[in-house]
Amino acid sequence: MSYVMRKLVIVLFSSLFSLSLCYADISLPTPQTKDGMSLLESLKKRASTPGGDFPVGNISDEDLSTILWAASGLNRGKTGWTVPMVHGVPPYVRIYVAGEKGVFLYEWEGHYLREISKKDIRADIGKQNFTKRAAYSLIFVPDLNALTQHPPEQANEFRHIAVGAMSQNIYLVAASLKLDARYIHSIKPEMIAEELKLPENSKPIGIMLLGK
Image 1 (cartoon, rainbow, N blue to C red):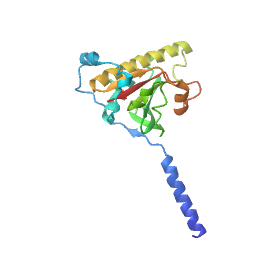
Image 2: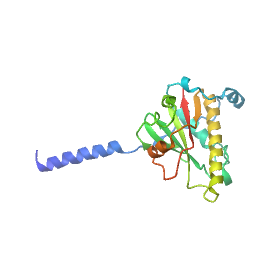
Image 3: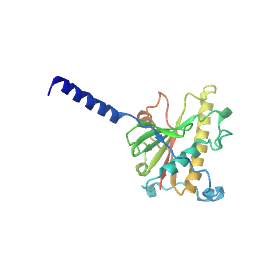
Image 4: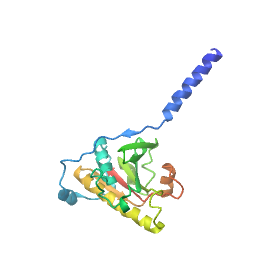
């Protein structure tokens, strides 16, 4: 094989290898905003699925799309939020989605998933063994670039209140879609921060398991 041919082969394989490492965003289907279970019925059926009984079934892209749309709180177009937002500031808690295909950041403005890693970290992020059973784990992470005008303790309180409201939205929609959900606070923050490539001093607040 000539020198030129060898160089061409090397360039070709290098290009293919680089392409295999490229990250890819995922467009989400339009969330379901009509029909479904009534609010009062969803409240009645809302529950945390026991860890030992957590299912291992898959969740459709349509259901995941609806869950994330509900979690963000921007559920009335641009007229307001269904989760507490200080001074109308956009969500100051980011939602990461961990699943079989890797880790993604939910971009609420464009309603899509931005790939962070191709690694499946579901078995490593919680202190309970059953966390690996969930089809998806939603990881709540504070946006440290927001609420900087507030004292740190107050900003932290606002973030925890937002996570509480977001997780409640998820519980209600999960009940309506007949999905299983469970909020977990016993997590491994340092490991999660490393896998999500979070900025220094940024730590997750909790995770929500989703299954079917």
